[in-house]
Image 1 (tube, rainbow, N blue to C red):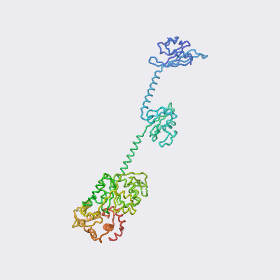
Image 2 (tube, rainbow, N blue to C red):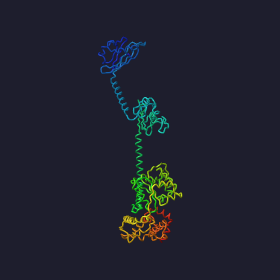
Image 3 (cartoon, rainbow, N blue to C red):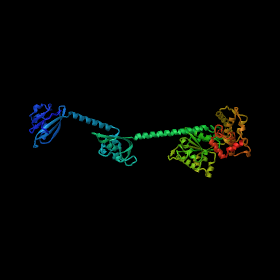
Image 4 (tube, one colour):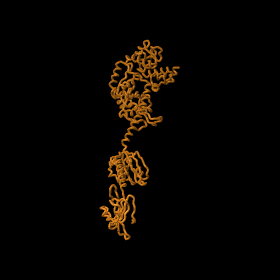
Length: 589
């Protein structure tokens, strides 16, 4: 050190000799009750500063000394440095005192700020790690401890990646070199990551969203801060919301398809309106409906063609707890074997040639409601197997699909065939027969309830008047008596068709039905030589209608409309009965 005294801003200086006497000084304000001139030549012992004297004595022994001392409202840093001669012998000591009050205040502010910042970090709900360049923890807040199960003491000084980020969610290794947190330490790029997991001390994991931000000190990369949060609740909420949207979409699609189906049913119109009749067979039938409707038991409706089996299915459904859900109808007799499964169970896009879109089957449309399987005896054997499984398990897959679809459906089946006989012949499964035949209901033939013919005729006339926009008040001549006398081999459907034809031809309020009743079967109990089989009657009747419509099947003036049948159903019946439309037209001409 130079022996020349120096003037140091906000400081003072002096040099004491080996005898502790002040021999040089600089500075005007002293931290003692003496001015600079008055201490020159004085021994330090005379100044009364005991720690200063003690430190100077140690400095004279060759040791540099430093200490802080508060004087008045200031804090000074004293430094005592030995002074050597050319032979390196200690000949005195230099004393420098610097006022560090402002520095001390700044240091206190920094400590307070640091404490405040740490308090904020400790109170944060997100987990926070401070990491050095090696990826080891330097700071861990309480939220990180709670979420991971490790204490700060267990984590500080250890690699955070190998504690919490060592594996992907599926358990496959996650090398540190691929870790975004570790990458931020290496390249200084901020990273925000979603869709990963952190592992807890107990070996379980939880989904996280985190940000890794690099830290710089004096312009150099010094580490990173990782801030993360457990997003289990958010993921669950998102999943629940997605499932809710999917359910809404599913219900919307289902409602649209149900609406389309029901609109089609409305266009086709119920075959016979409401149950009309007071005869004993009808009362017994209604009593059975009343008993079975409130249950979920399967119902098998038996009866000849045209007896109103679908009407019975509607009555059972409308008097059940499922009345608010749809009654969905499948006419098994009109579906080809290649389409019946698609119709019942639906199909996925591309399941077969022509399957351009996904389609829900009738079982899905009827979920929560009732499925009416009309002409169930016409189902192919392989479809019967799948139907039995659905009835047992209440679940199925769409054609071309792998997902199991669960449904809650009540089954009402109907047939005009002897299912027991079909079982004996091997064309109908016994187990399916017993599954369907839980509660059989017989639909009585119209010839067994002649006392209801007049009521039905009047009812159908009223319906026809509304349908065709005519004023129709009754039947001309002894028409009503003739209706009651006829055997009606085509049952209620034949009666309805006769009334509608009469209404179409009517030019007066009283309609003529006598000319429309087949002459061979005009009177009930006619000679058996004149009686025809049901198939012969049905064939002859359809041929007469086709002749009347000049071979037209569809449309408002077609044979299907006159017969109140779906065009496809009529075509199916024509094929079964061997009716060739060209032959019919040829006979007409």
